[in-house]
View 1 (cartoon, helix red, strand yellow):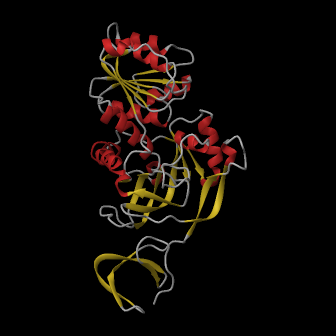
View 2: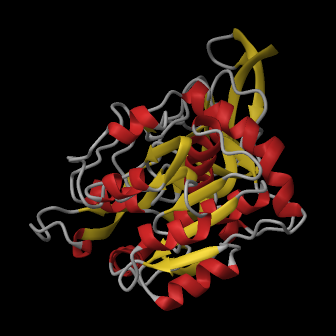
View 3: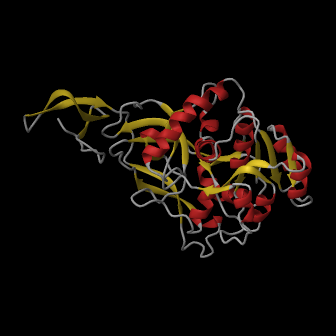
Length: 381
């Protein structure tokens, strides 16, 4: 007997208090219509509505963190083909969330406008075509949006198991930065053992990840940061040289380190603006410059002669608008090459602080004030 029809994708009914869903494996009987249907697959029971954080532009026209408000009664999304639904335990907070809150980084078309690009939690439902991830799996996932909510959609290929020995809190801090750094520094720039990596913003989420990954794979790592305390933090993560850009000229410091006629092989630049020209001055022959953000602006005036003379490569990229297949390839490489390093203690998640979901405003304020070293996460469940 059918008690209620679920809003989720496919033929689903509620029987004896549990949500179940038809699959195409074998047959069953739908009482009333007397139609043969596929065998039911059992799902965990969960509500049809959820609590989430939304940016309320009417609350504050300046789009400051105060516009982030908790909203109840929001519909839980349905997992479509190749997607899973995650009951969120923790959600990571990242710089792109701030950009989206300010209207500068909208969600891809067809995806949730709710902030949040990474989560950890438990899979409670799967869409058609999902084969590897199962209901009940504990995962951390890169999402196209929707992380600041109790339930979030994620592509199956962007889900990874939480590394052995880590809790969900740490798991939520991994996807956005590790996908980004692995894709840009290793897949795109091809950093190899013995090369020198320059990381701007070494104390942030991306920077702290890049320092650890660079050292784990045998590179010499130079980091810039905005205070002596942050430089000390970078050194604890393994940076061979940490430069306070407010009191030192990083160009001079790098030249002193590498020696005359040498340079850095890979630059991971999140600053842009005048930093690009300065970066070009200290790059080695065959060096690769990867732009991932433009804190000082995307319009750059630079002398490109070094690009010709030293065969430099200028490239860059973002993840959010890449295809699900491309992100799945990154996830596959991470699980093979990087996740075992957590289990061996080579890599360590760095969570500066956790906040309750309703404290998203404070989390954004702290991230924008540059007091954060590492990552911050929201506790959802």
